[in-house]
Length: 359
Length: 126
Image 1: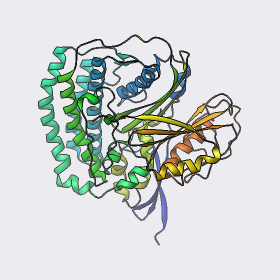
Image 2: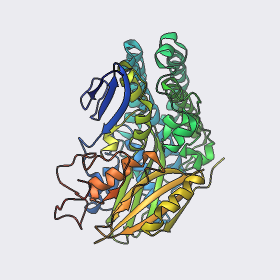
Image 3: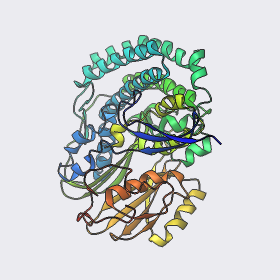
Image 4: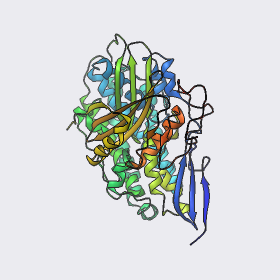
């Protein structure tokens, strides 16, 4: 039997923009076990709930992550609205959907670039990020912020997107989709990409479900879980079907995200077509008294904000379960039998967001 | 089609936890999260499960020194939540499949969210 050695992977590694550590137990070049370790940048943002009024905590929630910041604010706001039985105006629901899907586009294109970089496909990385840049421009144009949008609030949204701007976004979607499909064609059909990704880090449908995985990671193994199906924001009006692949390998996880880029473009287009006129918010009266597990589908999967109030202006508890934390067990199961050189690609394939995890 | 998502919460005694969790696992539920809430001198632990967007919560109410059994033998991925609960609240969890013994989440201060253990006493897993 070959000698076993332990190779530390992270917390600083070229493919990891944020710190996570894995102890890789190797036999020659083959991984036999991976032991994760987190907590290098734990910020304790949950506890800030005791010091911020429930309406102000939206600002903290959207700073949990710099990529899915809008969706953290949305998940938190929807939780408070459920506890306080606040009915959000229709236009606000549609605007929330447009910003959510724009954030998903930006996140998936960011990931596709990082993944291409991890594979060593540098010009594909640059091409992905060039497209992402145009999505960031739209976010900046419509909200004022490229990273933190600051547009979601309890009871609705803070700002509108005017008819002219919506029409401009609509016109830009066709050429943008064409460019995304050209990009996706390389990820889905290029022989070198297939050779690098197919059969790597395979997790079957039953295992992915049993391990509690979420998002594109579980959908790539054939499990159709996507919280947009519950119809929050305007998803119930727009109609939605999850993107599912069945191979459960790195290629399938990449394919789900590529196809979700197309799905997001389609959702934005339909949301712009159907958005009603009307108010942007309702006045919030009273204070939250009760509890709720609010759930939203982020780019990396289901996020949960457990919120609990006692009738005062400060909540007593916010517990945030982020998708990357839920995807750590499946990552640990993906790595055995992988070659050491493939570990960065397998780790990237769950799209780890440590900023979220270390909320 | 929009799915009707429901949430239910059931209080369970610590000695009934494993039986209830086995029942949910046999019923096809996935483990969504385990979270802890300080309720002033005691803790509430929520074990959350989901099947077809139907959200089931098992709720334990514990004293500060009560040991709870690990459910990682039933749901392998539970170790992340059980280590987190131990590291951030100091709750002793017995029999975790991957027990980091207090090093999963590296915080400068022990149990920053805990009222009952704020004195800094060692928890049993450490």
